[in-house]
Image 1 (spheres, rainbow, N blue to C red):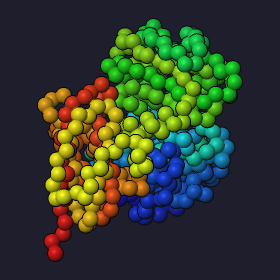
Image 2: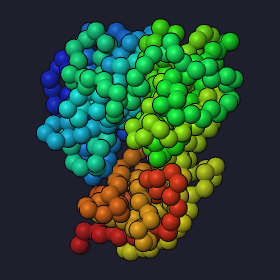
Image 3: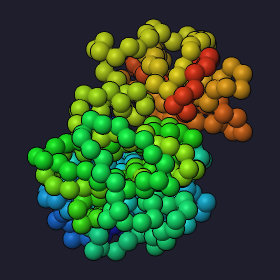
Image 4: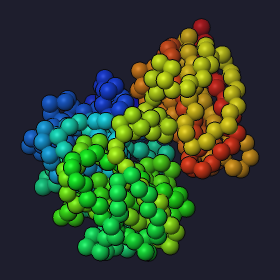
Length: 399
């Protein structure tokens, strides 16, 4: 994948080289680009103008933009595809917790999130909704600075935020509880933190397709998420929220009459990182702490069969000569929908894919140098389990 980035005030194009950002956002930031060209120019709190990049995304890959905040700041994060491009974005904090995600809130297929973030480093991942090749602009700025997108009007149907107000919220109870209700019954839940606390919020029922928004006592949006894990949603507030009253808005993008399981728990940083590995959004370490099947030196062709579920199954392999690598994930029968991702041994993403062509199978094609690599495969649906056949093929230049 090649990235072309543009700094908003400089209007200068360049092919971007990956930045060594291994530790940012729990590993999500590996291979990312500073939105301002370097770390110092990427502090949105003090930037004299918004920061913008143009990215070319090919073969189901993702583009990662990095930015920092030197103080608590109201920010607007956007991605707008050119032509028929349909970007979606996810924002991670420095610990790897998801603080927001969006698909179409910018209007006309563009993605947009406005929220208040604490001081720290953040990573924005932009993907193509249907894995089609896409050129898109990404912009990060303060809410008072010029927007990239017009913004989509909020409606009762299809919006991540339910209609209504936190004034009618139902009390949630103790942190650590799970409450179940339909959106028709309870679109808003209230809870109180007696002391500063970092929390995680999950909403589960893939058939309903839940989306969640976290508000403070003034109903200002703190974080939002849709489809963090399959069609389920998750918000990780890794920085402690101040003591006080809060509200969660819950919507069901598919059916508001279906029950949704809502859980509020104390944020667990180790569990958050483990969840990133399980979703394939970060490469696991090669220290034995995560199960990785070692395939050794990859021959010209290899087949590997495995029962694959919602958690990513990992494989490592070595390449002794530069060339072209093809990895295909083929579902046995009609029950599987595999998803693939490829990393180098430093955790930098090389390629990802879902639904190659007209099928639900996945295919990665990449030119790679000699070295060690990690590939992950999982099911798109969180409740799917089926036999997946991985096929590896290598092609090297003729002497």
